[in-house]
Length: 358
Image 1 (cartoon, one colour):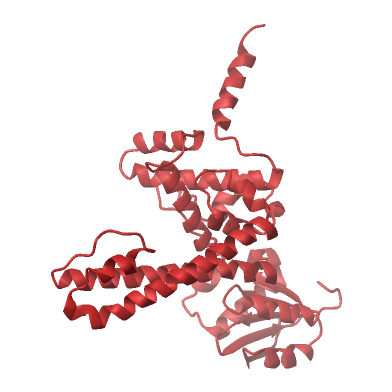
Image 2: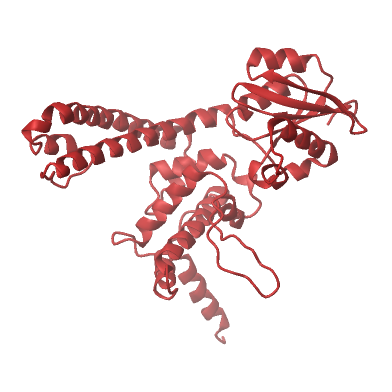
């Protein structure tokens, strides 16, 4: 923070209006007001203020607003909303109260905000390619399920097929009375298939030419171009984590804890961090443990957990494999090593060899 800064500002961002509280060095309230959440209004308001420390919660508008305020010479802290229990547990929660708490925390200790760093604009733009494809896939699934449900309720049945062949196979199975209602849906599914294929080509190209580290991650059978690219773009910098083991908790793949005295119950995973990447990594773990998964150390380890874990063992095994997979991916990315599917087996063999007398 600039040594000449004398103001601490809490900015509660809203979709139309943002509330702000300004404190001086002694913690006295200088101003409480609101400003439209537009570039022009924020530029006008904050360009008239001396360099200040501004705190806001991460959200829809935090990316562009934080950059705009930094360009004006302010120090901006984007708080991790999940860590601010003092805000979302507040019985008197409101926009004005939130901005006041943010200002107090910014003045007291920035680390209390658990500040995060937004990824670069280019990485975000490339990540939006993945998200757009995902939106189309979910829309396609919704439409396919709609067609199947309507036909089934009329006593018909559509043969099993992949999403890409569904329009042609379903067209011949539609009951005549339902054709006017469902034929446009099939045409839309066909159009979505074309657009999804375009995204697939673009994603393949991004992972090959622009982000070549993806190829190293794809050495792991079960990690495809989408998961590899999402991993690289979401984390952006492998040095962001000092240890690869930190990636699992960052993606919410570790159990919650509510330990007190002798009580330490088993709880669900935290589900913090990026939900999109977590879903993709879990999907890769399900493939590794599935019938077509590769015979590797990671699969064997996961199957042992699934077979000896009691109730819900398979679900916990999938999460455990996803967590370990994220660690392995980060390690490969950070070190530049090639993937060894028999890593643990080789380590055990080496230890046994070293333990034997010469």
